Amino acid sequence: YAAKNRTEDIIQYKHELMTSTPESLSLLSELRQAVINDELRVYLQPKVTTKDQQVIAAEALVRWQHPEKGLVPPFKFVPFAEQTGFVRELTKWIIRAVAKQWHDLQMDGQTFRVSINLSTRDLLAASFPEFLAKTLKEYNVPASGLCLEITESAIMDDPGFAEQTLAKLSNMGFRLSIDDFGTGYSSLGYLKRLPVNELKVDQSFVFGMIENNSDRMIVQSTIDLAHNLGLDVVAEGVETEAMYQMLAELGCEEVQGYLIGKPMPLDAFITWREEWNARYGSN
Ligand code: C2E
Ligand code: MG
Ligand code: MG
Ligand code: MG
Image (tube, rainbow, N blue to C red):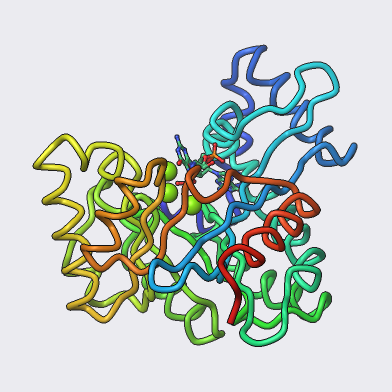
């Protein structure tokens, strides 16, 4: 299966097309049309430091502005795109869209980094690192300006190959992050070997940590593990002051969640950041 993925997904893609139901076939053609008709949107969600409330990065999250259905969230089409292989097109679209917006997001001082979510298919496509390099060059975006988020399960599909690709991406200067940490079948041995910079504590543990002692222990252990391996920690799904306080006390350096800001289109994000910086100050 992984070997097929490596060869550009074509065989798998065609096979799934032939065995698809009418509904999924029409979703696939609608998705293709969505790219052609420019119906996909990038929403940006801020990441803030717990030390001094600086907005240092954002995560790019895809939305589908459907002509009849309105704004469609990713859970309605990203898993499908992953199954069919269409996610490779989706990722390319996102990378281009983020590259176009990247300069508008920069401020004086340090580089403002944007995170992009990758899927297994991207990681296992031999041509992906070159595509990334070529596209960023076209828009004059440095590799250090992007963070690539990868889930544990995407890595564990073919750990050997994923390790090679991640090493390549790391050498190219990208920041690498393990998304939804704690929910997949990760191997701590791999974590040690992979050139990652950051762990994202999954939101399910963050939601549970106030009332559930086990969730709190998982969050605390993840933060300690990350620090002992020299990695930064981001907590996602921070919805309340209580969660924020607890994470800050446990030493989590970055937070992301509705308490800080929801995912927003570029213009709204820039306005939001100005207001945030006016309130908390920016270095
Ligand atoms: P993720 O990468 O783990 O992203 C975090 C999700 O949590 C986002 O959902 C975000 O809007 C949501 N979230 C953030 N803060 C809070 C909070 O305080 N409370 C709650 N309840 N939710 C919060 P979203 O945008 O619906 O995306 C869901 C998932 O879809 C993402 O999970 C990611 O796995 C996938 N996804 C989104 N965009 C892309 C993309 O461009 N490419 C790929 N391959 N996957 C994507
Ligand atoms: Mg993510
Ligand atoms: Mg996540
Ligand atoms: Mg998630």
